[in-house]
Length: 451
Image (cartoon, rainbow, N blue to C red; front, side):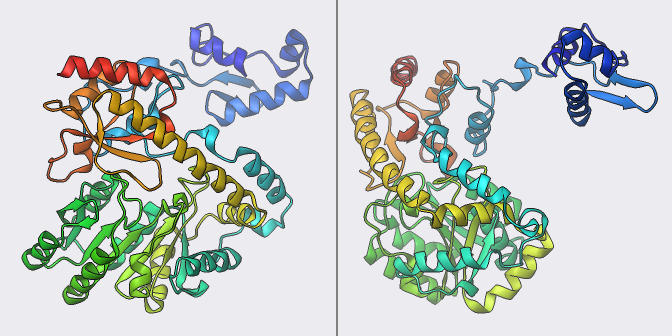
């Protein structure tokens, strides 16, 4: 496969060129006929070559398989809410990504995932090929219910709907709760994908300034009075991007405002398992009345294993389930079974114990190195991977990000998280992605250029 692909890339084999027969190729490179057959079939499946019955195999494409110019990050791309994700996901192995929102692959429980995959490969055929049930795996939902009860969120397995991610969970709730033209409140700053997802639903998005203890309640009440919002989306514990935790006093007052306004709160708790000392959730205070609780395993286990969930009031379950079937038909049964295995065999618990300790060390080290550059945290996070930091006076984060990108560093400028564009001097850092000294040398250079 490599031999043929390289010849196509170099131009030695052009579109329409007939390849040697299977037997001829086998003799030439001294491998079995079955090996060449398998290689040809795989190349055909990728659309690189084409089989003509009774004639043989022919080159199907004439362009190079990979264009470095097209796949490299674009340095002139405006810093918008999708910029960070695009740059991080498209970046090559040599690019550092302190601006991304996930852990390095080397931090994930790869051995445990491989072991669970081997076990899953021996499961009954239904687990491998059938649709999942509408709510998703009952054993997994039962475990999730017990985990939520430990956080004082009273819920049954019948109130939990499995989704393919936390993003899909929010998307379903937006489809269910709001229509075009409705108003939704978000924090300022907040996770930038909230902005993009809400725009996709054509709602009016209003931002409320976020403080170290939660949203500014005076301005929150004014936003309710001025805009009559239908919904509010937040992270009450380990807020993204700030790392702050909502105080109990703020939580109680916030719930009273939501009750008076008949407004639903979506509590995105995707970072819950990073906590060393769990704090009460909005869903616990409200008993899933005004609050719908969502989470997933993308950040803690694997972004490739798509498995999230919604914990919701009982009378909404049927409507949300019908909506899930209408928009995605069924969830990923394989992912749910894999997560179930990792939760029950002890892999996940051991992994998270080690991960919390590792993140704690990285947080201390990254904070110290950033402060040497006069980059100061807005709050001292109690857990998680994010530091929300203010740059030295007069320096704009977007300018620093563009300079650093030319040096192979992907950063997360503050205004990508701010609907009001009021965080121009802030930057979000992921401490798990900051072990390479190149980052701090590049930051120092970018700060000097932009000062």
